[in-house]
Length: 215
Image (tube, rainbow, N blue to C red; front, side):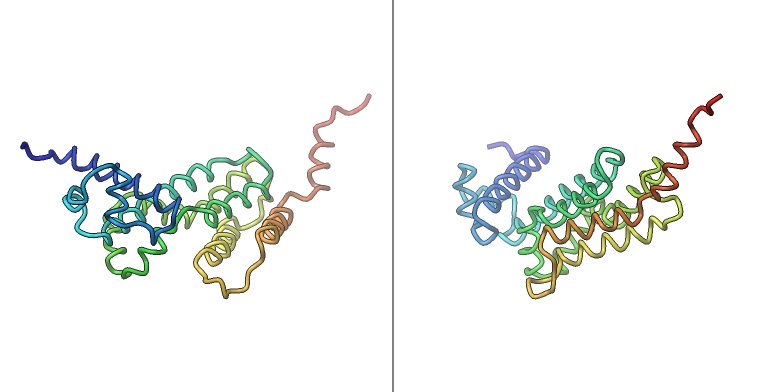
């Protein structure tokens, strides 16, 4: 039998990761076993071991895919200035982070940080996630400043850091950490949006300046 080409192996690997994601979304990370994946993919267990050394490698690969997908979502979100209210858009950012499918990532972190970190360092997707997470909110706020929907005098980098840090802290902290419920967090983010919105009087004055003087 001819040996599988590198391209065919990568396609098989990607297909198995997709099927593993389906299992995790449906049944949780603990349900992901090599036998269960073989049943899901309709192949022999031995074939999976030709692609992945062990279950840990499979879980880590799935975690890397989760980070890549989340990074793409954040990059798209950051380009959405002007699409909806600033408060709604900040709330959507929180939803991207807090509602993301990252059960495999959480499980992979328990396998040992060094192994996961080494794989993350090799992959483009996670790198884009971490780079994007650090500057996405600030970039979005700068775009809204250009549109006049956020005050020009606010420090977009500082507000971006605070919003990102608060949301990331909620995602990374355990259930014992004090936190608002989802509706409360939405209210907080909309309060931030109101605090950095252009002053209504200034906005009305700019409208008045554009009026044609009456004769």
